[in-house]
Image 1 (cartoon, rainbow, N blue to C red):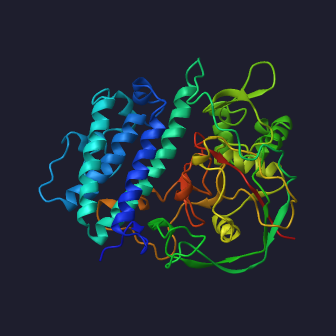
Image 2: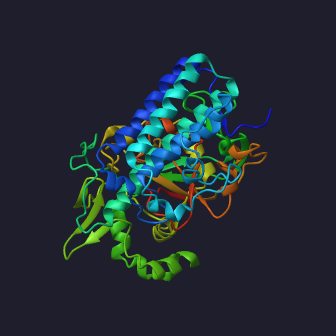
Amino acid sequence: MDPSPASISPRLDAASLAWRYRAVRAATERLAEPLSPEDCAAQSMPDASPVKWHLAHTSWFFETFVLEAAVPGHRPFDPAFRALFNSYYNAVGEPHARARRGLLTRPGLDEVRAYRAHVDRHLIAGLERGIARDLAAVVELGLHHEQQHQELILTDVKHLLSQSPLRPAYRSELAPPARPQAPPPLGWCRFEAGIRCIGAPEQPSPPAGPGFHFDNEAPRHRVWLEAFELASRPATNREFLAFLADGGYARPELWLAEGWDAVRALGWVAPGYWERRGGPWLEFTLGGLRPLDPDAPVSHLSYYEADAFARWAGARLATEAEWEVAAADAALDGNFVESGHLHPAAAPSGRAGREAPAQLFGDVWEWTASPYTAYPGYRAAAGALGEYNGKFMCSQIVLRGGSCLTPAGHVRASYRNFFPAAARWQMSGVRLARDAS
């Protein structure tokens, strides 16, 4: 059998898969509820996509890779959608240019929602009739794919709204943080040298999640790690303000060459969404423009900024293997999208030092020092679904842990996110690491 781009949990039967399908699709619709049709149609930059496109593309995935295979003679909702809402699957056909998605004024939002309803009706009927195991694995892949797009909806909307001089809020009232308190002083957690295993386990076991993993999380393999220390929590805005005060953005010796070029070319003087109007720093959030919270984890950093900050702090970024070893026994809880806060929150108070690191999951994606490459023995799946992850294993950096905009059931210790080094519209932050003495 051809390798699959995903592994399906042996505990996931057809009934629970149908339930999860309804839940994930409904969650996407709820994210779009606060938005006007105009909000859903606009594209603020080539890296972001209109919400309308996200709504359609996630449906395109199920229609293209499940319904066409499961339903003989399946008639597409609209044949033109095959190109309009294809993202990058060249084996399926020529996609509409990514940078021009905002020009798709038609189909309208109502028609896209009708498309979603059409796909839902046919796919749920197929699940209720029974579906082959290989197609069930593709459905589960599609649900995790849609959860990725749920996070992208929020990050793309945030970037879009930040471009308006009105600085409108996605939601005027965000849920208060679950832990409104000052974070503990930064401490260090030591991990001894040795041979460790990383990657998704072949047999799912807590805390690895319900059993699903993407193909890029496998095969599980051994790595040698020297002794290292990981910061007890992510770096905060207060700590990053000290970097600014010490001229961090004006000191080329702190920066990688490409990073320094980005600072000068793009005019970076602070993290993304920070603003200053003659007084204290402000930060644009999904709740609008607000005073910068000094105790919250710093977010919207590029890899270059995270690396420069770590060098300034006399530390470094963790490798993804170090991060995963540190997170292997951590509970999969944190500040995720379900909290409704939609913003990083301060670490829980308590002793800092040798205990397990806090906030490994949720709040901010944490840049690692690792390039996004294949694990030993990795082989991309045959066919179009093989394009899901493998072809991006070049010029990307791995991030770990999820963010405050990530669905809670979507992350696990082995999850590998990846973005270009200059990307900072995502909810990306930094956790320091250092060699153990």
